[in-house]
Image (cartoon, rainbow, N blue to C red):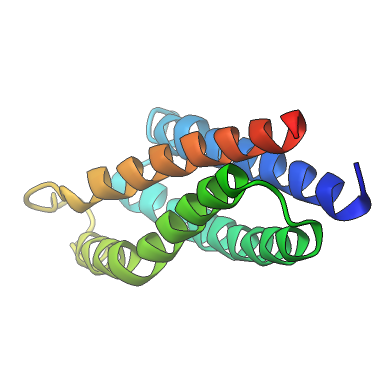
Length: 145
């Protein structure tokens, strides 16, 4: 295993761990903490996911560079292409709609309730699941090769 290969494996599994920890553990749990209102949870979530997406973008660049140097199998390239495409769609198509929704909820006066629920959140979560599967598959393929 050369350095580029090792970097790609490490970055893939770090990225996977971050998505699992933040999207599937931290995000849902913060709303169950005592005293955390919807507005506070959304404010925290916006900051956390903005930071996560920046790190994910850096990880995507690192994987692209490592794969360009290492030249892995087509299966590994396909898996990471799916993960990177899912991230791009989240950033370009889904995050702006989530930001609009959270802006509307945060603009509601204290003590009042925002109306309706956003289904766009489920689209974001679906892309998170796609990334988890793709990153796991890509990392495994790299380890096996």
